[in-house]
Image (cartoon, rainbow, N blue to C red; front, side, top):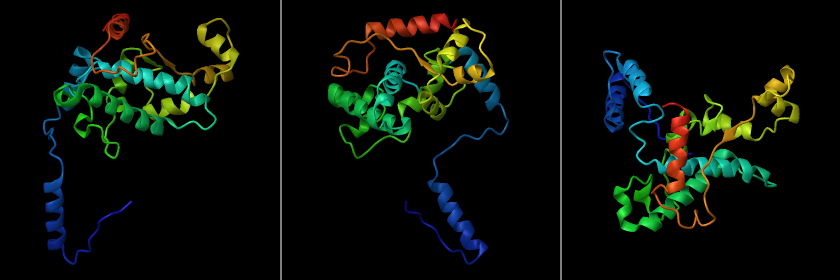
Length: 222
């Protein structure tokens, strides 16, 4: 990793450099009245699981399918990738597939990273899994709730004991150790997709995906 630094010989030099850095920084929003928290609270109540940076419902199901594949297949390999590396590779592959499928028209379809096209040497700073993670939990697609994406990855590697699974289902009282073991389990609900799903990947929801999302949202009374 390369870094850039400077040596300031006076407070004047330091202030000039800081002014330049501030000019180069991304624009932000000042919440001088402190109503941002109130606004977020109303937003969570009226539009749970949804934010303004989420533009395509497809990413809810696409991300869930990738997380399920990581849980069911990647972790069974002899040398599995960790979740961060797995998502970095697979989400880039999905972005390239979507760019190839939609061609030049991808620019206005809300494809994350669509401007990079088929390039593998470029990638987005924030991946779809990060953007849609809160919604996946709110809609009950990923459980338990209140896990970070990184914590999800760590817990996937832990296999709960049989007694813990029974305790979790209420069929066995179990003990404290079992309860702690059961708490490490994670679940991912996914729609049914055909074998051709990944080869014909598009940004549009399939009928099965749309029905799956509808049922998840209704089940959560959202």
